[in-house]
Length: 78
Image 1 (cartoon, rainbow, N blue to C red):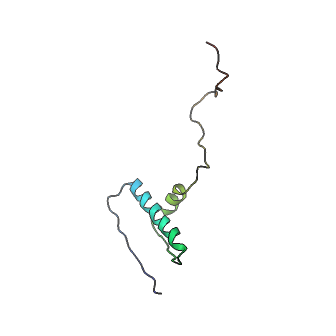
Image 2: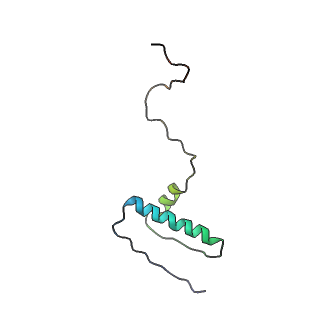
């Protein structure tokens, strides 16, 4: 079958809207793959948006609070 090309021009979208659009297109690409449709996406920022948008909660940010952590039953007496 002949290769089909779609060109989408986006103007005025915020960074969040752009990354959401890329994530939605990536979901379509993954869903249609089981039907034998091979899609390739090319866009600026695609790699980072897909990498961060499809990440499972396996990353724990370090605490930005300085000092010692206080356990619930180990609080100092006032």
